[in-house]
Amino acid sequence: MRRRLLLALVAAVLVTVVPATAASAHGERSQEGFLRMRTVGWTDVNFSGDTVKQGETITVTGRVKIMDAWPSSLAKGTPNTCFMSMISPGPTILIKERTINGVSMPTRIDCAKGRVYDFSMTFAGRRVGRWHVHPAFAVKGAGTLIGPGAWINVQKNAAGFTNEATLLNGKSVNLENYQLPFIWIWLTLTFIIGMVWMIYWTVPKRTIPHLAVTSQIPLNTDGAAYGLITKKDHRISTIIMLATVVVLGAGWIYQVNAFPVKIPQQIIQFRPPLNEQPAPFVTVAEGKSKAIADAAAKTVSLQITATNTGKEPAQLTQFAVADLTWFNQAVPSAKPTGPQAVDTAYPMTVQQDTIAPGATQQVNVSMPSDIWIKQERLLPIGESQLTVTGLLRFQTPGGIKTDVEVDEPLTPTSFNF
Ligand SMILES: [Cu+2]
Image (cartoon, rainbow, N blue to C red; front, side, top):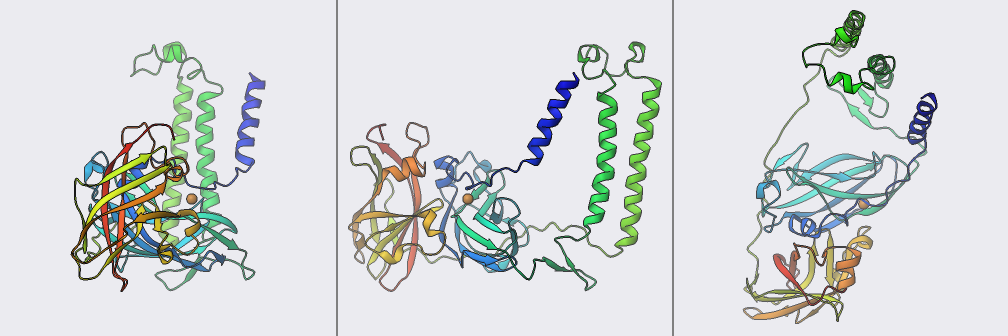
């Protein structure tokens, strides 16, 4: 018994003390393909840099669309509450400012299917290291959907690192260590009370090891007749309860005196201004498109019939799928630049990529199947939800862009990829 207890203690200490290796990604590829493609689409994501000293900032901007193809099984089919943030391996960065469609976004927002949100998030480096960070869009009922990630280097700041915040009384505090001694005292006191309670009821008592007895006793008796819970136990429980009340009372009196001016934590949910999009100048005919995974050619191809309703030629320059961008190799300028490009940009080949004004034609997009199926795991061939969903971007010679959503069931030629 003692030996087992010792082993358990050693194991617990090891798990707590030995540091785990830092995560090198965020499982973006482990989320199901349909979930990644049909929930939100990311375009024009750009990080302003990839190397900062602690306390210096990087701004990430971009656009996120809640797809029209949003799965009916998530958030009851109608997303309505959303939040934007950054995902990083632990508290390695600090969000300084966040805007959505041009307005500051301190908390969550009302959101809806089909809407488009332009965001900007400024974050500061906190912990020294090389970190993989992503913008992320969380939808109530669906979870957090992550955008294009980038590796960010945070270097040591010789001048030291602080996270200053100005209080209502004009005083400035460093949030890195503000009230730390009090937090330690409080955690220690409450931890001790909790441990005393736990050890009292487990180590010398038979309540838990003798579950067979405990479970035979009716709910509303304390088993005094069997020696399970005695008068002394009642007395000690009362003392522990009183100690808890005293600690809570002392804490309450302390905070009333030490911090007379305070505001309750704010819960705001608002609707950001609409991001009005001009009507798209290219339409994709419904029911005439095809998505094919061709095992022999090792490609995933998308064949669409598109009409240019504008007055200028429209060229297909990119296909944004979840957090990835496939760019038309014939248009090198379409390739995303910046730190995120390494992780998220892939080339595609497009036949007949330019549509004359007023014309309707078939456009064929072809992408390597290895990236779709093996590398990015967007198409789990053999599973029940195989679709190719994303935003096709058409662009005029003058640089006017329009994004058209496509959502096509996929036909594989074989299951051998
Ligand atoms: Cu990551």
